[in-house]
Image 1 (cartoon, rainbow, N blue to C red):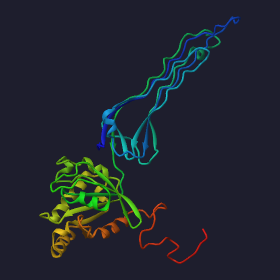
Image 2 (cartoon, rainbow, N blue to C red; image 1 turned 90 degrees about the horizontal axis):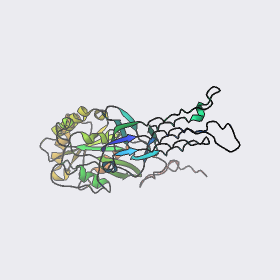
Image 3 (cartoon, rainbow, N blue to C red; image 1 turned 120 degrees about the horizontal axis):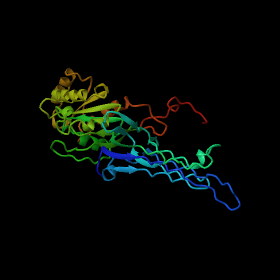
Image 4 (cartoon, helix red, strand yellow; image 1 turned 180 degrees about the vertical axis):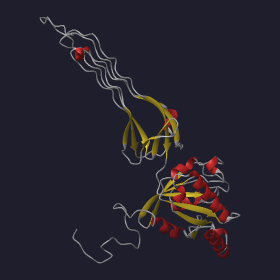
Length: 352
């Protein structure tokens, strides 16, 4: 399945049905009077967040969404049938923005979240509703209110607990393949990752979602390289893992380049907790790794984790640090090896 995180679509809710002009005509009834019913309501445009979707690719092939109009009123005071709502399913994490992309109209962060974006027009009045003591045979009616229409942008921001950032070829794809079941493409050249990747990490009885985005280069916030388009996918992460290639020319400068781009992008990315990981230590000796780690600390890193995405060295300590930034274990998570449930650790017994 192709990944698509932005789409522009046209929406139009249904118009209300027109009211009817009708008069009661029955045998032996001399003065029947008006009996035209009202029109039915037009269909609403409704967005619903559903599980199992992680791309907006469906909106590349279907870009116009129009709800049906309500049925017209009929004689014998029959109200027209209302049109069904047009339900549009989107992935969790989708934002609906206006055509200028300046205002967020809806933000879907939970499965099942439902938003009526455009309301259908109400049905027009039939002539029966115009009857008065002085107007016994009205012939006026309403045509029904028109529906609403607008162009909107859909933008998908993947929901992940941890974000993976770094320069191109820092080893992010190898890392996510090591800690998850993701099969990201790995190559000895820059920008092997062209779209964000998601994977589920299972560590010590805990689970969290890890997002890998394409590598950043200097000037990405201004559109250089792939630009900052995919940084939106880590806006909602609780913590960022910043991978730095130990085989690069200047790891300290590499760290500063990415830090500057995160700050230039804004949206709170520069304020998120970050774990600095010096990657590919299998390609260098311990003395060189210690020297680079000290340079990173001198450049502002609070702690540096020396790891190897290829061999798995040091990754357990890094994942332990990640867990410290995540919420407490949920009831659906099971203790990992060497861990005990609360209560059992203290040797207390309970029949419940």
